[in-house]
Image 1 (tube, helix red, strand yellow):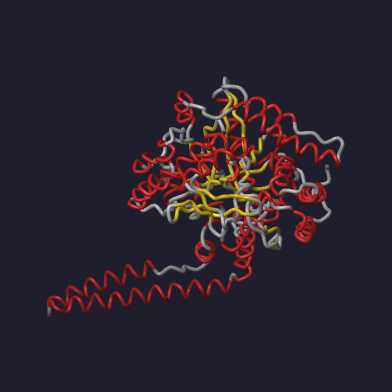
Image 2 (tube, helix red, strand yellow; image 1 turned 180 degrees about the vertical axis):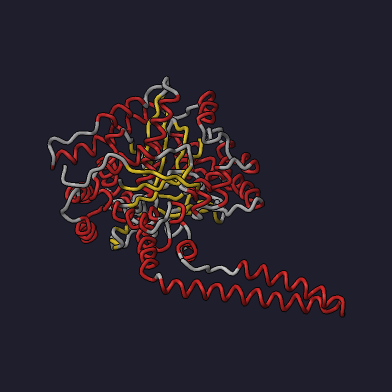
Length: 549
């Protein structure tokens, strides 16, 4: 399709995560290689770190089984898709990557996320782009090895409220449904209202019809949300070789069954992570996830409920299911697919069934992975390299023009609105709005007054200092009034700052945490993803400000 905007390049400006003010100190400390955090991971997120890891990486995954299951999962997509499009086929790069997983020199670069409708906020896209770009860079650095980007669908997650909406063009599109159990098993048949709303925002211009066709097919031709999500993500990223894994699978769970049994009965993850969390708390780290004594759910039908140990038996909350230890062991052996790891055990499951060397996550994910290393060590599973996903701010040409006219730079945009306005006024006003020179003169006068007062009576010095403090406060208030008065003179210009900030930082948060990718795709089509891949640098750990040329 050629009726959209086109561009050869996007301009990129990079600033440190610390300077954005939107990332926790733990994340920036990890990126800065703070010595106190080194005990909570094994290898640095650098090319040298990967080189060290690859020298002794021990793959415990069953490669043949993994590739066979992925073939089966993609054949299901192929089968459904061919009903409405006889010419449909799984992209060749995906097929090649699945086959390469059978080889001993192939490794995965994994990111994971919930099954947000319409891909949720932009960072869903950014996670996957980071995985694709990192896989390419590692192939360049280690040409004798293969690296496959993987999107792990959180198809067993049960928090439907978190995935049931997205915001596009500032409008919230909501899938109204009372749902329970694993979200990947939900039938999308009740999505019609949300689907129509989303397509309505996309419109009919540029690449709108193309994206509308993708989401229409995804959410109407498949009877599981996991399969619908696989279709949509494959339509966007299949050409880059992204492999999508749905681990809600009986044969994959069989591989993990020994650890499921051991951890439920011995509560090893609870013990290990609790000790780690005490250490992290002592370093001032905000704990993201607290383990439970049993970190598995029991899934049957549309139900996914916590497993607990009470009255000397294993019970499934809100159900009649109950097991003795012997019965529990038998159930795990016969039906491992019914046991679903929670947030602290899912990473271990992932590393057991994939030949993985890196996990890519957001700031909160990186922090909670730091809690998990001791559990990996207990089960003798390699701990992957932790990569903070790329973050970006996308600026359209029209907005970039406003920013240029306002004489602002990328770093300015991340300042709080009032701070930005005040600094802009001070920079552009023809009047002197600070009273620093005057205050220096008054300070000198007060030093003389204090000296004279002390000669008369030494006890008068504190009184003089109190008067000085009151005057300093009065001067600061007067300076604020001067700036406020000058703001009125520049009201129109300052309103432009409000417009820029509201567009780029909706709800005073990052664009990527609020806005869906849809309208950016409408504007640029697949070129948008191409530009993200070209500009993101996974191992540089800088925030990318991407401006349309």
